[in-house]
Length: 265
Image 1 (cartoon, helix red, strand yellow):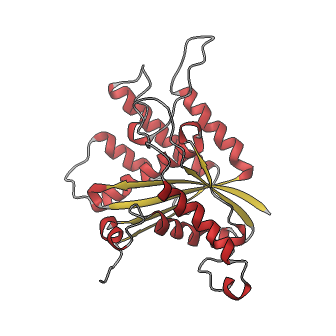
Image 2 (spheres, rainbow, N blue to C red):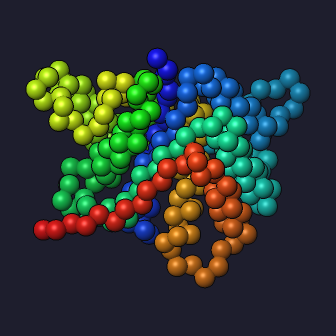
Image 3 (spheres, one colour):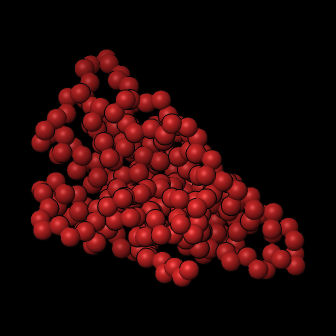
């Protein structure tokens, strides 16, 4: 039996009425190497005086490196691009599979699903559907950012544990395994091989470099969606370079779907 961690990042983008969930599948045999590569990257972007160990920084794509004192202006953009490129390099180097589920009419869907305004359940179902083949011989353990952090003031923070998020992920998996215990009903499950879907783990992304990695990957995929669906006459140099890096994610490792759900009332 193989084991893999599924690091998850959810995002919304109001300009496109978008809700998305990104999953980064990290096999257990590569976990230590990918983790250490991200920790090394954090050291590389904040050089320190001899015999000094600075506090660990957090890679949060929306405000990437804003809390690194020596970076500003063109220099910070250059280092941000290097972080984006390193994220893509890690995907290629370790053949990490990426799944992105995106809906482009979040508000309309939320009107008929008012208890889940960020579409956690819908997008997580899409992730699970993709995992069916993986779970044939692999135990998959979802890891989600669900614990509010107390990091630097420039990093956006949740004000508290989001019960909707907890229910969408934890309760969904628990319900699946409860349903499986009834032989006459288990065959009606929409997702195959759920016996190898582990209970979700909720962590603090401020202290999880692999949750930070999937955050960066999610940000890059959002740049691709913006390029596809926003009508912008021209992109600045930084956006152009970010988009080029996003498009370099190997196609055989990326499974992305973008949907505008038809709703009949």
